[in-house]
Image (cartoon, rainbow, N blue to C red; front, side):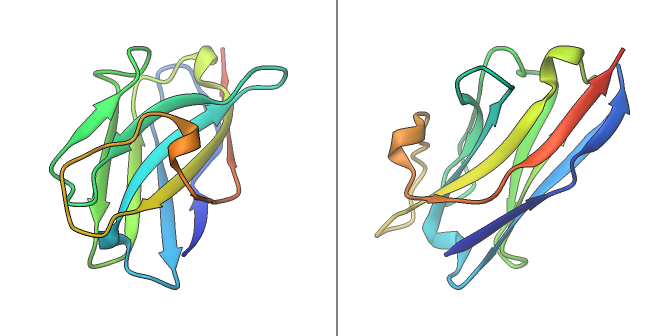
Length: 127
């Protein structure tokens, strides 16, 4: 599967952005998907994850209540809705996918659990 993240940009504090992760090559319904972010000079951090079934989601504490991850299997796309953005949300955002043999509600929280990665999309929150 090939992944392409998009939707990043330059916004003000408190604004919203919606990132998309479009998959091609295989049906995204067979993949658990995660979002990660990496700021310059920092490690890649977990942001959010959604199970292959879409039934389970999980968020980093830093984004809980502000970000929402969703899965549209019909469009082969995962979205990350980001509200109330803060300067510390500034980073390159990456989506990643892990193949599952059977549809389930398990999420993956660690970057090393994902086999497929898209190119990042930059989010910059200006104060």
